[in-house]
Amino acid sequence: MKVLFFHLVPHPSLLILQKFTYHYGIGIISAVLKQHGHATDLLTHYCLERQKIRKKIRDFQPDIVGISVTSQQVDLSEEVANFIYDEFGLPVILGGVHPTVRPEECIKIRGVFGICLGEGEYALLELIEAIRDKGRFHPDNLRIDNFWFKSGGKIIKNPIRPLIEDLDSLPFCDREIVDFQKLLNYHGYLEVRSSRGCPFRCAFCVNAAYQDIYLHKGRYYRVRSHESILDEIAYLVKKYNNITSLVFDDELICVNKKWTLSLFEKYRSRFSFPFNITVRADLVDKDFMRAIKEAGCNMVMMGVESGDENIRNNVLDKGLSDEQIIEAAHIIKSAGIKLWTFNMVGVPYETVETIKKNIKLNRTLEPDVVYVSTFYPFPGTKLGELCEEQGWISDRKVTAFFSDVTVLDQPSISKEDVAYYHKIFPWSIQYPRFVFIIKSLCRLKVSKGKSVYDLFFPLVKTVYEVRHRFKVSLNLVPVFFSLKRKKLPLD
Image 1 (cartoon, rainbow, N blue to C red):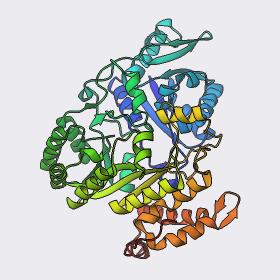
Image 2 (cartoon, helix red, strand yellow):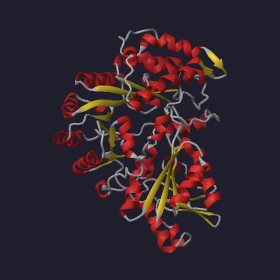
Image 3 (tube, rainbow, N blue to C red):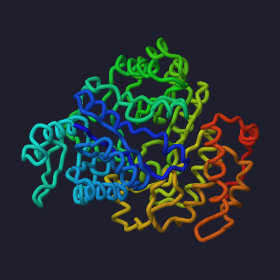
Image 4 (cartoon, one colour):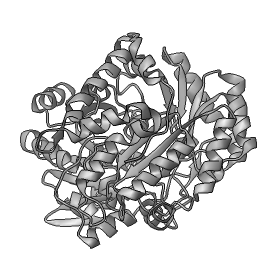
């Protein structure tokens, strides 16, 4: 059997990112299918490209199509499903986060044969083997756990199967489904996952919904064995060139610090690549940071999210004080490890003053990298439900990573202020000498909803792309960005 996957991505902020992108979920499902003798292929799209889809389907001749769907790409998913159904009549399966938390919506999409909720590795394998053995419309095919199907005007809802307990039983992720070497040639780092799930229940994250869906279905947070992780790294290092560093792409790798430290001790004995990990502030301590630094940790990524304790803890449900975050940042940097902070603007009950508090807190932390995203009320999350109840969700669409557009119309802050502070946030922390220029560019309007900054910033991104794609050394750029920081007013 042949399965054609679609990875639908937001319109990239950098064109090159759309060309070189990888989807871990599709990769692991593809690996399971190939392990059992099936063929897979992949198309990555940020818009409906009819000619490319026609060519791929005619060349590959798939038996079934699988589309990974996020909440921000559900409209594009519907376009693709409709097009494939109308032109080819192939069975289309939707999977991923959005079908899991909004199955009633997704199963109604025209052209969709079924949707897969939760983990899809063995559910999809069971489905395609049932279709192979019994034909597409055999009644037994509609009784596969994790799937909802449409049949005869009815919706058949099957139960959720238990979580995959033994992650080592899964094959290594299939990276051959994309031109993975080209991806490495661009950015040089290798992403590996050592675990699944997150034990925390932040109000803006879908993990809480997944924990509820899988209640009594097994442990939600699971880890691979050290040997499995390290063997995969060794396999990839042997197979691919131009690997310069690793990212342990877990939602949270340090839940069990004893397990994590043991992993990195073994890693140190086999590899010399520097690596990055993600932590929570309350899981950081001096001994842990010292040990992972010795093992090769280059950077730690940590969520700050908001500089206002009330919002961070009573709205976002992070459960972290300012003191814990400041102390964690101090420990990380004292160990000689770089700090990367994640932040949001436009969260429920946000004000201009709470954003300024976050800028001030980040200045105290002195991160090496600052990421800021505009809050999005994802379906299935506590805050998504709150925003729906309050009637704050507008009809504005957001499909780009790190967009400055908020979909919320809430009384505490305007959409214009959210966009403005999204633009100036990282500059205010990392390059404050130039903030007055950025602020001026943001306030000079060239058309409705567009500022001079919106015209200027793509130029900066183009320089970034050229430097990375062609390895061009532009001497002015590091000089510009390495000027001594100077604290300036937040307004």
